[in-house]
Image (cartoon, rainbow, N blue to C red; front, top):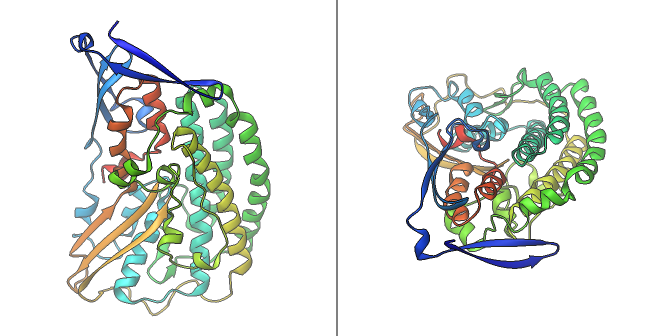
Length: 388
């Protein structure tokens, strides 16, 4: 038959390993996943070389949605470039907003009022929950479960309603400004946020009861796409992908910024480094985001929401700076170079999805095609962030 079976028990489930034999090498099939395929979550193309249902080689092909985001930074003023950040990762747009304004503030020495720092934490964590909810529903849809995405989108709609109150947008937010935020939080926003958090606390246990313990889900995730910590480090993986492999690296803790050091929260980690651990980490992160938002609401001081001394036509001094924040998919980094002019001389964006995608070729080798779909979904890729 050209293949051997080796079985290793894990609870009630078995891991299947493919060991190619010489007679199998002559009968191969080249198959395209994408660029218009639901399992790729966007215009990502993966060329796979198959032996039966097993993947012998997988090669991601990028460039189908490339928009020259970094080059655009060189022809726009510092302020004009702000809306671009919401288009890099449309699921956690506020984290990209924050990375860019944080870099400019660091370069120009702009002070952010304390109230604005807490507002950024509250809105960014709400956006993180929204991002994880979409991943949760879409991932389970990839694996054949339709109902969870309806629950996920019902809760996500409530978050979008809340963020729309203050940002004016529902997806590609451009709310943060150099020295603060564009608008203060009203009592309606604060009360709506408290009401949502109270209700959402009851939803996460329901998600676990509905899905997490399901035998079919666990069979599709446990011991699938096992990512050793050494391999994760080698590829530069960050976020839930890295933490699922057991390393508690979170930019909010490792490279503290804003008021996160004053807030009490845990960094969830996995044990086995498989797709199930990456799933568990993201659900646990939503619980931690609830705790962060509640603390920020209580500690938020009165005062201005923006520094009034920031000039409309900003010209930071010549120099370069790097600023990183923790996004829904991992570490977001913005490297700016200024020549003292009205626009950036150079913009370089560090995309966590780009690094996380590189794992796929190695993780998918020797797996079933169905398991490769599970692995790809567990990485939580946003393709516009990769094809920036």
